[in-house]
Amino acid sequence: MEEFSWESLVQQVNEFWARLRAQLPDDLVSREAATEIVRLTRPVDPFNYSDLLAPVIGLAGLLLGVILSGVALASLGTLLASMLALGFLLTEVYGVTLEVDGIRPPPYA
Image (cartoon, rainbow, N blue to C red; front, side):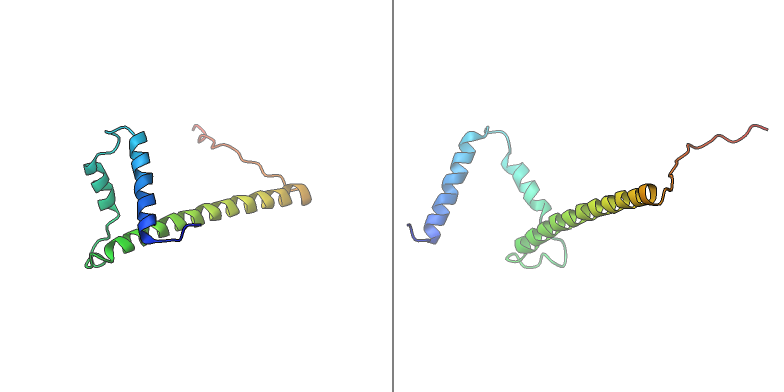
């Protein structure tokens, strides 16, 4: 088994990007477009003072946004499941009927 070294890791990553770049068309993503996408992840004042920490803060914000989106979707699923269980409990166990009627037009005078 090969020992882990920084040089071998960098070499493997470079080979991966070279294979990926060879498979993609040349004009798929320009350098300017990639620069603009990376610029979107740069934090704003007062978190962008350090050039060393700004990418870390930007990446942490991006990951936190993804995690919070997952929490929101899980909460939505929990809400829908609990509403389904409540509807089943009311209709099947207690015999309550739930009827939704459309909006009626006002009576003509």
